[in-house]
Image 1 (cartoon, rainbow, N blue to C red):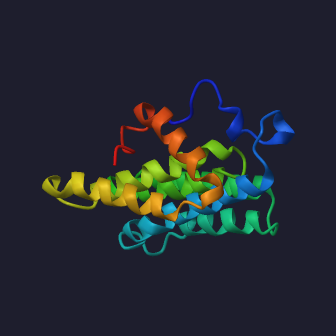
Image 2: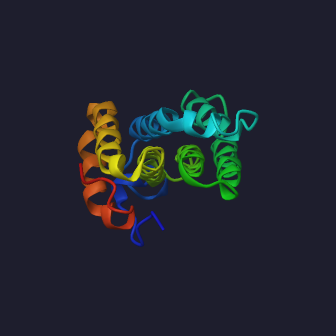
Image 3: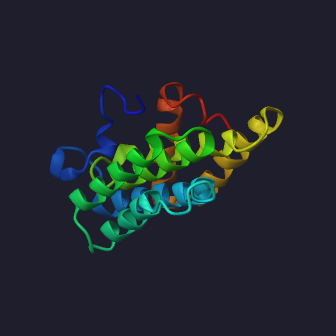
Length: 171
């Protein structure tokens, strides 16, 4: 499980009783899509005919632009997760990252799921001896992509949820 038992109101939209603005929700979705896209090649190189993870990332971005509904983005995320189920290693984690990115439209807190699975994909793509360096490098890359308006929110959420996200955010 990568979602906390008690939701952080800062990651719940104002419409649902939290404090997250639409603008920041969109930034979280775009950041999650970037995290997933950064490792997408690990899925696509192994399964070039399966576009479900790529479509989930595209739908997340389309949701931000107002071109698809939240339900469409969420459904695309579900299809990407289905693509992951029978896979192993880096390809599996990359597909899950894309699925989590698609789900951000529905629940903003899935942004860390996309990031965590992307880090797991990067780690799984290298030899055991290089895994720790790959984990740190991917984590640092993700942090460098964070837009300033959501930077502290995401970094605090990483600290708060690191233990349920496989400790991937120690970078």
